[in-house]
Length: 404
Image 1 (tube, one colour):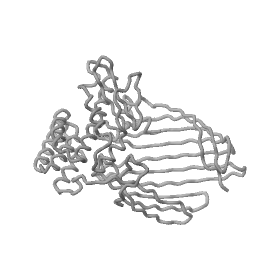
Image 2: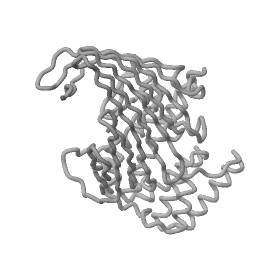
Image 3: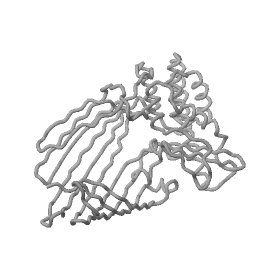
Image 4: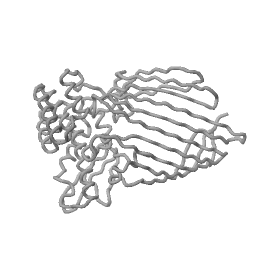
């Protein structure tokens, strides 16, 4: 819920067409949404299948559609209009357009179309000289075209520009690409395969150590077939139950190249949790609480923390619960580097809810409930997402009944 309220979905692509009737494209995974009464002019495929199919080194089923949609882009979005809200919308539209361009260029590089990518990226770095991702892609394209010296000169030009214009050194993505080219990193050849992650672990009553070997890349669009296993990632988990009311766990996963769009980045995911349950004398009544902490550590630098605390009071058929969530979002993940620079932003969410069990069939509860959430983000994000956005839900829930 935090991500929906305060995160920018990377799977959404907007395009502006300065025709007599303003048209927008909005693609959110596999759905096309209509924005403020404007009709959608073209449909793009969902982001995840595109990114993972690209990682397979094969032609994308929807890559031609992505290119066709990008070809509809016409100059500056919302041209001729002014105002604070218009300027914010213009920045967001341009950011989404560039993210789509970067995805399409990454696909081209993965399928060997280096020459065309070099021509386009050379033009784009002149038009958007402070966008480091474009410089890194240009270096990669030159390297794969056996033009290593030009790739290194490109880095020097980008670094000089950043130092003179902003007084900063290149970020970890661009600097990391430079270092990998210098060392001849074999993974720069782009030969990767689509893979499927595996989940392994169960709770136990002592202190076991579960270890798993699996593939780190997210699955592609073919969810019912079998991807080639690489076993390039691994995880372990420790669980401990000091008493019947307590369940503790600690786990780490070392994930190799989870995102096809950033194949050179590995992530270490660490979690720890504590669950406590107290049974009341009245049958079907208890209170259960949980605290969960998570940390993503990226190989190119940067840590992102998250935390959740939740408590549920069950009084026979009725339940009242509260939840607090915290997450750190980087400007890179929010796709706001051009507006806000490199940095991280804290996002909080507070939820209060009520649920009532309607029926219990075959040890399964059917409940109806309602909840409300208030989101709190840093002031720098207010102009983009609004101040403390609110949300509410009414839902039906199916869950296992309490086992004795």
